[in-house]
Length: 313
Image (cartoon, rainbow, N blue to C red):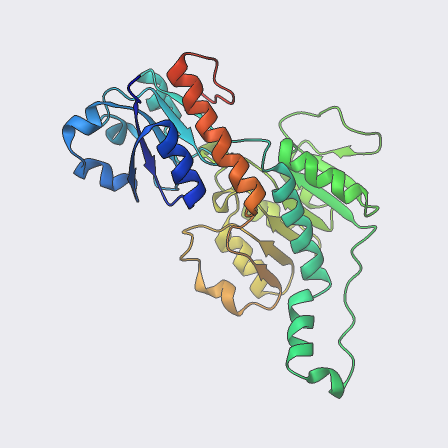
């Protein structure tokens, strides 16, 4: 039986490329912009796109592929894809949720611990031979604090569950109160949450609805020496207001995501009260393999007429 045409957009590891080549008639391009350069006959026979990237996948790009039936996104966030435009064209959209919850939650805790115990500084202190000159400065206790989860979805819940093990008092904000363990505290507004916690962990979905959701007003409500942790999307935080608060030394931050990645605002680089990471929340071999497998499973389901595993549209 003839294998159907799939275009893979983005940089995939060899194991994903091999698996897709075995399953589909595969064409690979590095960027969405490269689709326009493909032979029109190839574009017209393309049924599915395996998408891995942050560039806007909008109506104009979809129209380059008139037979397109499904866009399978690599990642839980699909805010780069114009879902309304896809729906209007009868194109299904899928993502890869759940398989990355543990890694992203682990990354959030790792950043929180690394910041408050100054783990990167301690490593340099030993490597540079400064230990002989005196003891390392005292740090901040992690256990027993007040943690606020901004967005108690799958990942937010996984983070909260882990923080319980550190004796944290759990606060959260979402669109409505959820069924949670006794003692967890719901806040109806983001400002109300920010004002009551030592750690403000942003676990929101991306997209227009959450653009600068952690606003200047929310950041202003954070107590002195509170820490903002972002493992969601750079778009969810008002970066200008965050940098202003960091430069004033009022709060700290641990950030795995930014606006304009990887060309982040250079002011972050000189700040001593912020921990910076290269958007590596789901970055383990095991999870990235699982994400690729789920992406391909969604494409296979569409091609064989079976229910999609993780549809978003």
